[in-house]
Length: 424
Image (tube, rainbow, N blue to C red; front, top):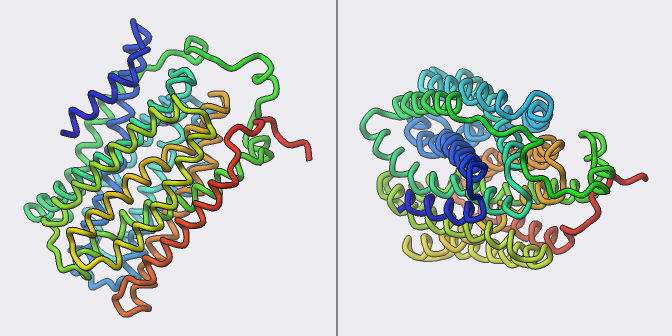
């Protein structure tokens, strides 16, 4: 099912990409898609591995939260430098190096012998993966015209939805067969294969050959670096809203498996199969959002994000209070549909409003806030669960607050705002 969805969405995104240039763009998009699948697999697998891992080392919920958050320490640190490196040295070089290095650290995760070693490996893993997002988005901005970038971004980000479907099943099977350590050895090996594919086939056309729809006046007034980007009000709006949105994303992906085991009494294998349903919902909404972002006006897309954030808050409340697992999965699926519309919105606004010369730096700045949410949230939720003696009521309340914050921030966001740096 996932493969069919990828092919259909790629054909939709490539409907206007005919001839040699079109084939080149589609090939690059697919390679980046597989790279992002690997990145999501690495991160999501820990949410399942941490259950047997925590038992082996005798970790409390707070320490499990620390393990889940440790990856994001390095990941957050590298967002802004990673964007700058992609702008300075080229996205292809950055992508090749970081995928190789993070695959090595993924494998080393399976060799951890203590809390300190595990935390150290996860931080270094995060450092190596932190440049992927800004470098990948920069490459997309180099080879896709603005009218196609929404769909390209949605397809790239939909890897998260596909991995949400596949990783629970794969993690459950591999942990059962080879243990949580073997799980990371296998994923590290897959990463080396992805590096080989990048080396052989990831050869984008030079920037000057890509279709550029930016007018001369816009090029003259466009920001030239990180300093000027930080003088743009729109950047600060997106930084704040992205922190809130990714608090929801990483709060749910990192803790729902543990919640379903501890509070609902499910096994890892049953969780793996049940998580297919919200994963498919997330995947579908990602593709639909990409089409919407390319076809609808910016104000209409903003309205969709406002509605989706309100829906996310409501379904989080219903997920905690519902009496049955079936209802939980239903509400989680609606939550995933809502979040699938929100997550691609921020990079789409940036890549449609800014030139590719600063795309890496701009994405790095906004992603810094996003991954800061990923750093803080798993740890906070772990502490809250311990404080409430194993109950998740405060954890869900924490996420609901940030869903409402996103709702308010989207209301005041100005997606058509002038992109020239403020002179104030």
